[in-house]
Image (cartoon, rainbow, N blue to C red; front, side, top):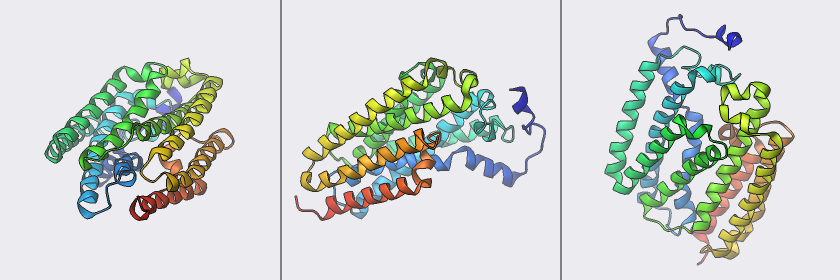
Length: 305
């Protein structure tokens, strides 16, 4: 920690434009891609792509971006000391000392109020789901992130809540297999991220994130292999019982390639620390996502039932 303190700017004055820029960075706009899961119901249910459904889903996406921004502010406020031990996270606005923590918390409280108020206006059930999402993240920041294995499952559960949000606002119906696919894929990404942190920080991992002391590279590798297998099997079962089984089965090879490509990036190239950016920075993964998305949209909106 003594080495990283030299990079902090605790006494340097910050202008208003720079403060606004830091606040925007603090909201982690790059991680808003996670909230695109709310569009899952629109893509995978039998709901047709029309303006009303699209606007409802877009509203849910924006509200999730706002409340996730408040969550990121809370997390970074609580982790600002430990983040100074991480080679990348030390650059975060509060950890670097450039953003006033009290100001950031005020903005976070405002975003939370706005998102919950608008969420309950959009749908009572959706408002409660946002509240559950925020509460789960608070529990994660306070305690659950220090509980081995459970920390990964909580992160994966937050992804599932995003997918459920899209179902709620559209009043759609999706099979449990779809939700299982979302959970397992999220768990797969979380394991890869935890593995990257473990190898990056080496012996100092526990100082940054205490739970890393309870993980090992062989354990995470084994967990990743198990979850990879379960994800592919679950998605295959989902396509078998979907409304368009013959056509949806054609997307299975795309999913297999995407997961194997991600494993290659993790185990061969040593990536995986930032899955939210890796998913669109790697050309192979990006092409896979685009091909999968276009295929699903064409099947759902053009294929005969």
